[in-house]
Image 1 (cartoon, rainbow, N blue to C red):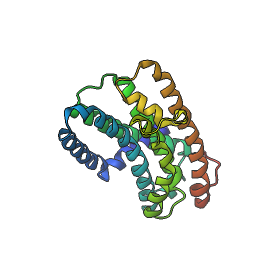
Image 2: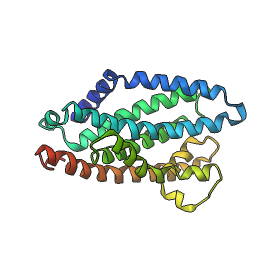
Image 3: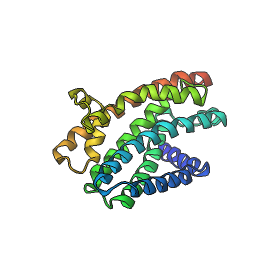
Image 4: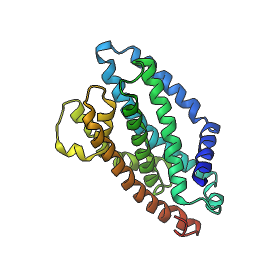
Amino acid sequence: MRTAAAFAFDIRFQWRHGFYAVYMLVCAVYWVLLHFIPDIYRETATVIITFSDPCALGLILAGGIVLLERDQGIHDPLFVTPVRTREYLLAKAASLSLLSLLAAWIIHLLSLGIPAAPIRFSAGILLTSSFMTLLSIGVVVRCRTINSFILLSQVYALPFVLPLLGYFEVWESSLFMLLPTEGTLRLLHPGLPGKDDLYAIFILLVWNYAVYVWTRRSYAKHVLLLLGTGGGRQ
């Protein structure tokens, strides 16, 4: 129940601060750009946009939201309540993943129509956005300013764009199979066989769990300890 309450709070917070309105504008810009791309390249362009969008949304917005909450002094009263760190993190990941999923579907519907494999498509968006959201929170708690966060987040995120080199046939490497974003591309690409689904979902789930553990510890160290609450309610 506390996770659901935290999720509802996040949705209201994002709506009140205009995140949904901004993202509708972003979707409109993507729609216009895609209509200037020749039909032969439009499917590839749509895959790239739907790949990069949850990455950017989770990475940039999550960090910005945490910094905004910190500036507004939300963390101090929040963690006096029974809300635990895991509930706070899961609510953030779920709320931003929902926003990312809505945006991805709108972009795809306006450019190509209904995805060929809707469940694969949705799973790729949700798991990628949740991963990037948790990664972003783990990074932003180490930063004091938006500039330091933007710089540090790019350093952390850079390895996860490498599978794009294989997608564009610039550089092939079996090591890309170890990265979650390789799974993302396989779920989003409509031409790849369904037998890749199990691998793709597995690698994304493994990385989601790993980054969740890392972020939870980072949050306890860099936020809760500074609030004087310790790690007792993780």
